[in-house]
Length: 237
Image 1 (cartoon, helix red, strand yellow):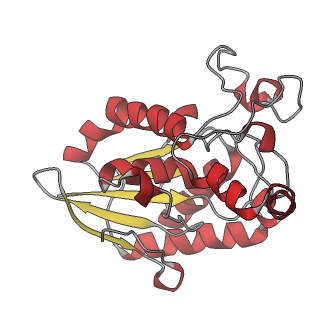
Image 2 (cartoon, rainbow, N blue to C red):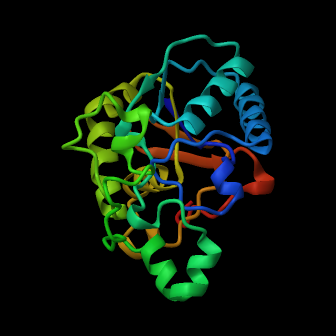
């Protein structure tokens, strides 16, 4: 038996401001730090050893993980992978979600946010919000940095990394991943065998550990959010 723990970062500055964040590298709010601390305490109660830690390249996910590791008193290095980054929201990046809903209509906005394969218009490469102009991504080839993404695009990069780097480790090890709403939705789509309509309904709360028990046959035997007060439906569990 092994355990996989998935955690969306705590509330970020742009979460609070209701902006499309995507690959823009913003930090946690004080509430986000508190959510990360609470996540660490809930994981600590499980009294298990974490063998491998993973995070995206993004500050809000990295700092969530650092806070959790401090609570767990675990100084183990963690892998940082751009493939676990949030979905790139293209030309929506930096825009206010409420204002966009008023401008294009809530139904159209929901379609862009939750559909499987529809993506916003590309973000212009001269924009300061484009990843090629953000220091965090200086070591990534500009040729592979996207201008916009659908959830399908996000799913493909997340799952390739998961299969290449993480899946085999889960046979005998406990793994913790801090990432983002859409990268975790991508993982859940595969892990829970959700169809394209189901994934559009899946909500991932910030800073709430999704604790997944995996049996000897590499099948999920149990799954739960550790913070019951802020748990969201997993649709199939």
